[in-house]
Length: 322
Ligand code: DGY
Image (cartoon, rainbow, N blue to C red; front, side, top):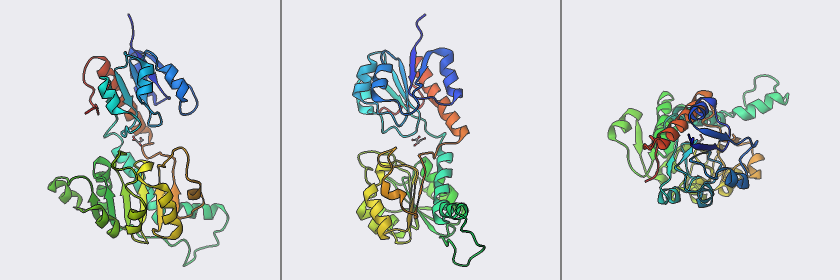
């Protein structure tokens, strides 16, 4: 019997991978890194399902290379800006993502970054390792209080709301901005106030970004917005790099328009703006907000469930095509 062919662009955790291997002919890229374009175009030929990562640009050329058997592109991420969904929809190809399972883990990490930049944890670590600790000092590495501060959440979906829940424990004032207001009940529970973006930027001590990358959110935070922020405020980005104009951010950090930033994502990953590397008032991480074992495992199962449903002729649970 002919088995469906599935190509996975990079090794993911076994739990989901095994579900696919039990049922289909599965090839997993063994290339050590982001699969090179030429290799991707070769490997997708004739596949029924493609499991992609956010580092893979899945456009018309890839869909052409795959050919008419391709039924589903299952992205191993909640964000799917790396896939030309419009093109896939035109061709009747289903596109899925992994929402929900990474919400709390991503919010945990955004919170980690917020705390780290506010309390200068990375600087402190460097200080100790460099042998500079001479005992308690009244003026050493003085940071900013998180408790009682104002948190501005840009994008109030699952992850944005998870940030608001964390802020409750820190007795923070929470402002949020999104395309639309959430239910009054949610606002009440999370003690969150809907404001426009300028108000949020002007009043927040911490601005944290949780929007998907779209044409509308590209460079949502640029020079004008950074200049609206308080001089002693911090920017946290665990969403997508291009939501922030990185060149403008470097200027803001160097010239003191804001106090600091903590970034898990970059405009041109894996490249990091070299100027950022020189600055002490920034904490940098390599896009790991969802990287807990439990969450990555759940993501792999979710990807497999999406593929299995689609290849059984059913609608997968996490379809994103309009
Ligand atoms: C996502 O899922 O979109 C994150 O950026 C990586 O897990």
